[in-house]
Image 1: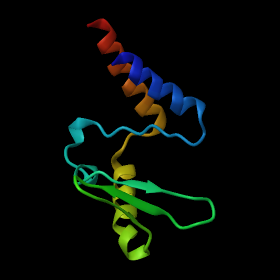
Image 2: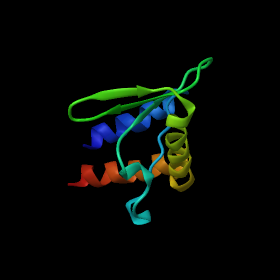
Image 3: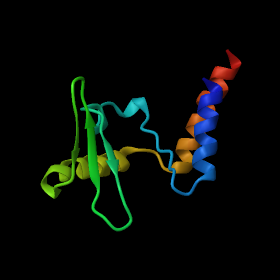
Length: 100
């Protein structure tokens, strides 16, 4: 587990298109716990939301469909630790696994 955590830290540090943000457990529930989704953004096209369920999946590209997901992402960003604090927290967790 420690190796996987350190890999995430290294990827985020080494790639400009990857950001590691952590929401500590102590903050409790948040919008990210409602259901998983993926928002895909493009340089010159509107974003797309991808949802995957047990028996189907869907891509949504209408603004009225993706707006709630954009708001959820903003809500998550508002409570998440910044990139440096997130990396520090993940490094501490990795160190705990290495001590076991």
